[in-house]
Length: 466
Ligand code: ZN
Image (tube, rainbow, N blue to C red; front, side, top):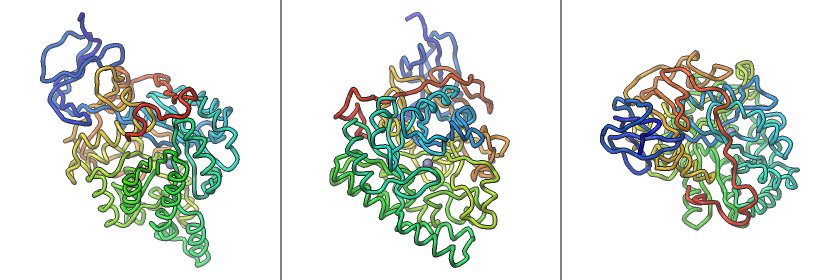
């Protein structure tokens, strides 16, 4: 051995299984070996971690960077800067909020072109909507790593009814891929929204009343039923409530291939924050009651949640202030890709005893498994990409709008006090974020394609384990 490219030493290395004092040796952008203790090694570059946490970079399975077509909302350049600043070394970008939405081969090509400026690695979701069943195979062949559908009406992304879901799931199962769903019941949310608006309700609490937990549970049950009927793998995104997680756990116990996601904001905030902060904290499903947030934390701590993401969903500030007088008029979505890790370190590790290996499992290893990207991504193991994040768990800071790398520097997290700060982010061996600044180049990010159609009919490696 003539020496490594990079040796990061003297860290508290955290893997999905354990935590130990040591480091990581890197060659050719990949992890050459994990190092126990603090031995001298020959390397071209050495980083002394100074006792900081050394984690695998996060894989954020759920972001909206709104390009092409809505680059003024975010875009891949600024969005990926936010990712790098948040210790996120891979993200998977959703098929909606861009114009056009990613629902056919041509739209996928446009998105792939827009994404090429990314600072960190990325993969893309394809969309399932009411009229694109004939396009799903093209999307799969084009490299999407999963499919997303809405069970409830969303701004300019047509919802899928049970028939579309069933036919889509059957096709997608044949690809060896899976369907992620936004699970809220169309009839119930529609009826409640109309009734509240008819009664003149415009206040912040009305948003939560229009989208109760019952609406989420109805849709989750329906989606699970379709997964059982078709045998397709199902993933429920942004579950906001403990009972939703429990329904998914019960289905898993029956042998249904279903996984769960919650988002950092359901764990960091509750409905009193929507009341306090206003439209900037509006999202769907809505923030829940404080006791519900604690119950969701219980499920996270019990290991019942598969994946935690940001659901980074930006917009112009005017689209938030549009809801100042009427909460229903505001854009729904929280910008958070930069804050997931500090939020979970603060509310999880520091306050509730969340174990660091469990944090790694939910934010890096499991999301990578979901898309068949593990162990290349989400893992500290020899041969994995050297995607690393150095974290100071004792550093307190209050998030300022100026700290945000987003195109529109607003977020419900602005003003939040965090305990735990990202110091350095490394993507395939290259330091891309250091000491509060983005230092890696745009375009460093590489696209991670799915298995395509070659593996039709069977699951990809590790895909079922998430
Ligand atoms: Zn989303």
